[in-house]
Length: 392
Length: 202
Image (cartoon, rainbow over all chains, first blue to last red; front, side):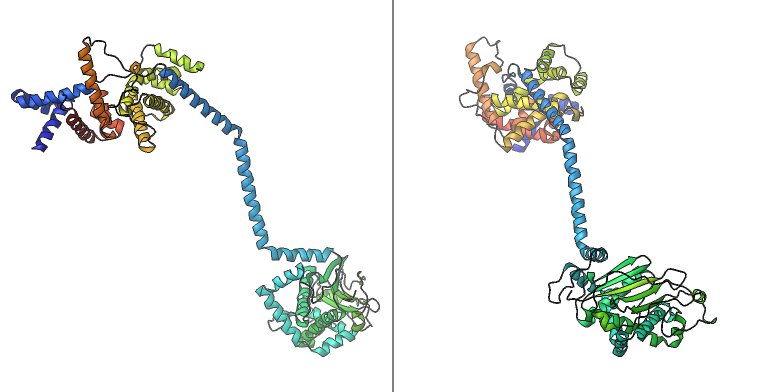
């Protein structure tokens, strides 16, 4: 009943609101004509509708439009001010953004630098070792310096550790007698030098059974690398600490000067092991390679190249010379040359060392390289290992 | 008052022109054209908001804000509905949302002593010659307004838009973003409640 009344009222309201379509409106109008109660209901709704529509109309206050315009204008001016401020400080904002970008890049560079600090320290240490005067050899009990830390970090590298282990094993295999002989015999040292040269030039070098412990080349960088290996191996084998700046390789004209700082025993060990390793290698190679590698410039056993072995092959030669008075261990590293060169070269003169290695170990520091005559048409390179006792 | 605002206010006296042209001028920043828009619709907007909030101060403030927002949003007005419908939608939404949020707008009972009602804002019916009849009509108006104020906002607003402002269902749906069926049902419900409250007087 109520639902039907509501539906009827809704139809009447739609009729009063002029919301009925033509057909239902006509139908309702016909019903209104025939239904007085429906007309009465419509009149009642109309009264309510009239009462609502008859409510007094309020008008906006005076100057309403002007106030709206002023408010809009203020708002517009505010927007303009904000716009001008944005323009005024736009460059500042851009500058701040650029600064932030630079800061981020800088932080990234710092982080990158810190991450690669160990390799960076290595480079710094090498640089210092080349251009700074020799420093005091750090005591075994002294706190680890930055270069030592760098060295320690380097040794943590697996490839280097493997290489050092291989060198160390070779060192341990070197006959002590040969090392001692090398320390006391000039001729032995010369033989070692020849053997070292042979090691470099020998085809057996490529053999994995051949311990590549001493490679002396005409390239200072390769020489430095090889010397480093031996020095490190010696330091590990002897239990001594070896700092990165414990030796200096300097280019002195066509020669190289290697200055090793350390106690005399340590330097002697290094020299002995260099000689011993070379000698051991020479023995392993046998007399064939010895004869092929022996240069006429070298004192001691030599072999004249024959036509059968005169092949076009790099033939670096090395001579280790112990100076008589100043304690320098002179390693002459000639440039690579071929056997053809050797045929055309007469025997060069190299100062034979007559003083035992033991004397060199206790000799004072010498920081200059003595020139060595070239053994070939190419300029010879001279490696001078200067012994610097610790007490100095 | 700034010269721009006063100049635009002088534009109120200009003859009425097409709404589309006014809108175009408004979008170009012509404040005089916008002043004409205000002059056209200010009373209707103000009256509707007064019936919604029952407070002249709030009605004026909300009306001004509605016009300012309309001016700000002219660039976004797509003209798919009339400017009046659009401004009304802004005004109604502003009023209802403010009431819902912070109750900053205080709805005054029209049953209470009508100190808020300013007579100068209300058009007097000068045609009413008989003082007794005028008093009777005024009494009925107060009852109707009280009944209207007693409705919930969702019902009150549809009654205001339909019976006071004369909008059809479609326009009400545009203002309130409601489908016509919902408008129709809410309107029927609101009128039924008013009828229950005012039945003894009608």
